[in-house]
Length: 411
Image (cartoon, rainbow, N blue to C red; front, side, top):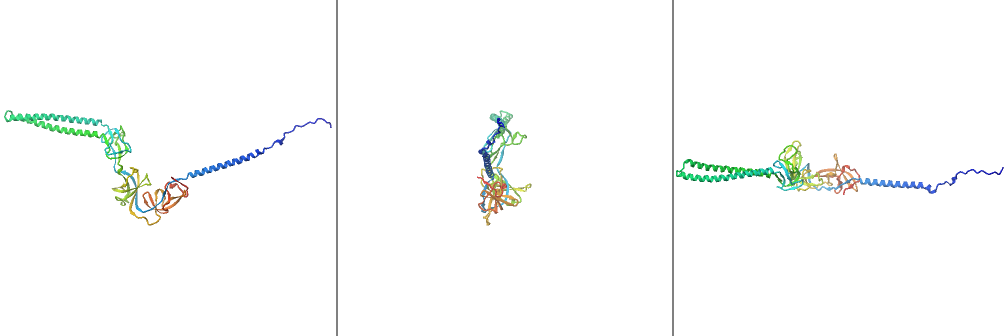
């Protein structure tokens, strides 16, 4: 073999230089663990949020403490009605006129005789001036007739002296007497005319006074029925442009209760009988009252008899036309011999058919408990069995609660 030049073939890339850095190899594992940790934190936060959200949704309730039945008067019957005043009037004008000024507004206290409004009095004032002028004119005529009468009487005396001396004829004496009698008659007529004119002046003055509308009694203005510039009339004039009233006044000291009692039970009601009234606006407030009168007539359509009761003591919270529930009470009785009788508010009862239950509050949760009811006591019911004195029961939203549910007590 010859020692000729050796041909070198080109080398491929050196793959031994390719290797993965150890830090880069551990990086994805760290990222995975980090993502897993973040996910767990997010889940914990969501769970905590849901826990607090559901905790905040626990219903808020009001509680009342059950009290023992200490006896009292037995309830004979219940009835519903309204608070009505004995003195209530819509004040109207006695004439038809335009309202010039009105001095009252709703809720204002007025005294007897206080001016409520003034009407346009221009026509009435003109009639008064005319009547006074007519009266003065007749009065002036009366003065002239008196002067003429005095002159006629002097003339009659002279004629009679001459007649006694037979110097004048009898006709002259008769004429002189006739003149005196005529002036006396005319004076009498003038006096009557002055009286008639004076009466017309009084009528005109009354018409002028009627332009001022006053309160017939003291009370509270509950309705303002006319405005300045409107026409008012004592009778309806048709259409919608004439008012028939100025304002409505209620004597708050005359408020009483009016209820309709079924005629089947009216024998249980008598004058002076004590009753307990509960206003619909204040269901937790028992107002003592007594029967004032039983109206001696029945409503044949409703088969009821109207009964009126007066409050033992009035209160500013009692307003006309408020709804009221009345419990007619019987004779005073001693405390019941049977133990365990307590009183509970009606709002705490959940009545389903013949079954009644309450929700008793214990350590943030409610327990549904079936009870046995007795007689009614105003806005309370007697519980014969199922509750004990001092226990706390829920009085609001009992229809939405369930046994064992967590609740929040309203502060």
